Image (tube, rainbow, N blue to C red; front, side):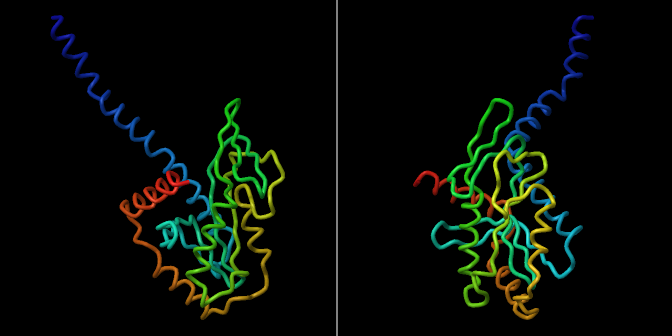
Length: 217
């Protein structure tokens, strides 16, 4: 009788190993999923608030002569300029300034440091400048930083740093046509030619390059 009860009890717990495996995988991939949610939100913003003359390229891993690869969350092409968009899906209070090397995220009593996204995106911008050097002037490439609405800015932010969908208003403020339709197509084709294949291997290669840079710094 006891053996039968014990056997039934064990059979009821068959899902426990699966639960721990799923929990472990979620913990490992949480930063990746968190980042992807932010990128997905920017894609929704572009589709909802921008017209069809804006072309959004997502998750662009490009070759970088200095560091191997660089990964740009979004490149927004338009007749009014090219916008390099870095997304940050952070919660809590955000403290930062244009010239500060590190910014701070504060959640309750815990504080975390992260790289100034303006500096991070500047590197992305320089890589894209080199790729498009013979097509477009660097003055028409614009950096945009987009945080998700879950955070709150506690310091005055630079004019190109936003929460949620407000970045689209900034983009639409550029009204002068500086790129012809033919040149815009050339830019798109050039970037798409340079983008590394979207795959798990490409992502792992980029992460390895980031780790190597961190170790050498």
